[in-house]
Image 1: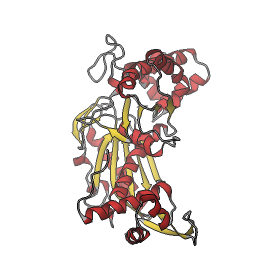
Image 2: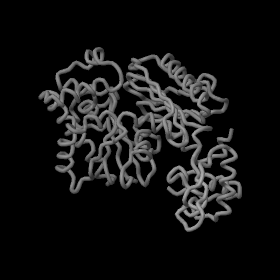
Image 3: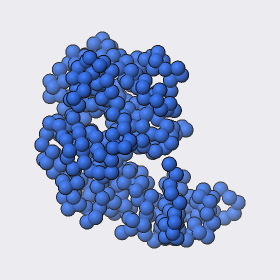
Image 4: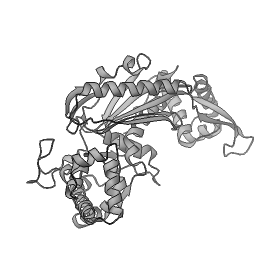
Length: 405
């Protein structure tokens, strides 16, 4: 959806500062002349805006650079690798992770720890997460960076425009507001620093949109990802489709077998019960709890499944084939309703794609006339964490004056 037109001179200035930053972020390093050509402003106007952004430390000059026009080379501009940075965090069923990303999109620091968060008391989990964020904030300050905010990815439903986790079945959390547990003081951040909370699938889809490296980048796609459960997010016209309450994309709880197994969400026969990590382990003859005990940590069980599939383990191959069929069944309705350009497999599903895709695509072909292509994310399980950190970075690019030192 197009941004509303600015109504005052101050709003116009803020919008144009953002346009300059986004131009350099998307195509930099660029000269002033190249920026002017990209955003359709005069060189004089762009020079004034650039000087302001240099003054507040969001842009830096790298030296002579070609603008693409005849004449002397202009000074190349780039986003600063000091100043504001975005901190992203992820609460997984079996891990916590935190990273910091500078304005150039480079991950400057990252940490992850194993954590048994299933059916846990949220208070100690959030205290541990706050400690990891505080350590990250201290580390980036030593690099000349300043945390501009925190975004947290969670495996559950988050009420739109709030920090409240309405339901996270695999964590056992309901109606939990994370904000009181993640205050700037607890996080070691400056007073007033914002904290956002979003569904992990949403942040994974945004990472795919911004960082996925697709050529050309799709503006309409369905992003399917997995950890213990299965989530999905829908991007339409380059924007995340959230739904009225913020709950759009709950593919994991679409019933694929109406008379099937009960699900933690309260439903029956949900996709998660046939294509989630634990479902695949059970179908392959592996006990999920025993496997988790012997293979702790994020990605360990998926790694085990992939290794066995590579060795030709018949039980695992059969289980993954059945999971792909279930995914194809669940996706049929979504594809028929939305007609996306592509479907993207992310998260743990990306690692298992070689064995999921044949049956998934066969099911889509069987049920849909002209199904969209299915792509595999290059970000994999890193998507939600990177999406969280980059969402903070983009908030700086969108409103640079709000993030002056």
